[in-house]
Amino acid sequence: MFDQTASMFDGFRTRLKKIKKKTYEERFASFFTENRACFEDMLQYVKGREDAETAASEVANIFAENVFSEYASGGKLPGGIRMDLSLFMIYFVFPSILKIEDANSKMLCDAIRNEWRERTDNPDYDYTTYEDLHGSFQEKLFGLF
Image (cartoon, rainbow, N blue to C red; front, side, top):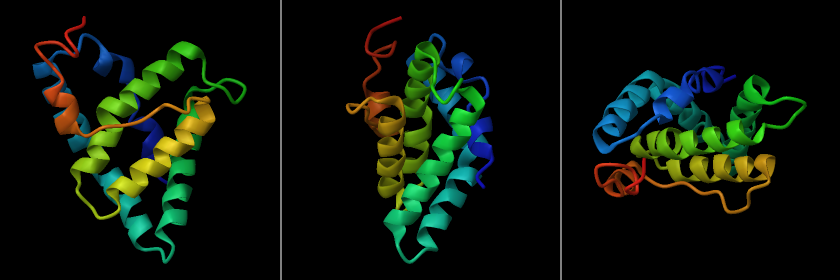
């Protein structure tokens, strides 16, 4: 179920490379277009269930399991990959889910965030919207790179 969740990470390091405001806009638009159907399927699954919170947790578990099966070794993500995947999710995955503006978007993001926190042992991990992230760029993200 939701098999595309692992493939949406294909080339994740390339999308993260040298991100400036304009390149982020282009890369995000491309990512959103390519993966919107998968995110809509996830939200539809949550909406179609009587207990939406449990459904969101199920989707989050499947999402994380698919990513871990692709990138983890021995059930753990190597440090560099874990950091890059976490950043990729902040820049692309969460903003895409929130951009759909479904009543369950925030609940699904919370569930995925919580699952990721647990699996990566990072209790401070969080997400933001596209607008907030995009607004944080000067010419370069946070003035870096």
